[in-house]
Length: 69
Image (cartoon, rainbow, N blue to C red; front, side, top):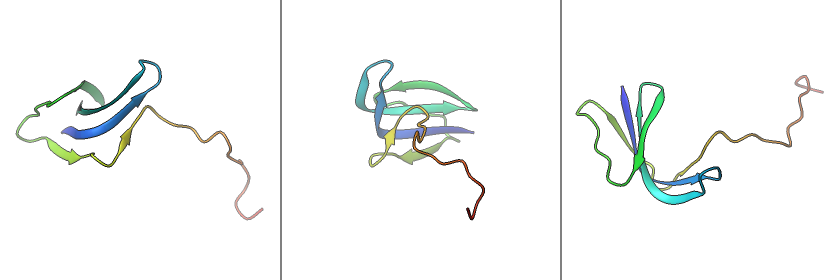
């Protein structure tokens, strides 16, 4: 199933991108990033206008302990 994220704020420090764009995901890969992208008729379209879309983020202040201690 294709997924189209519409109008999300794209933040990518590697490419220096910080803009409101669409992201098209086909299968498990990002197929396109750009303005006014179109998806197939069976694609799931998600309004991402209130989202920040970024590469995987890692919490650097995490404590790996057994629960309860």
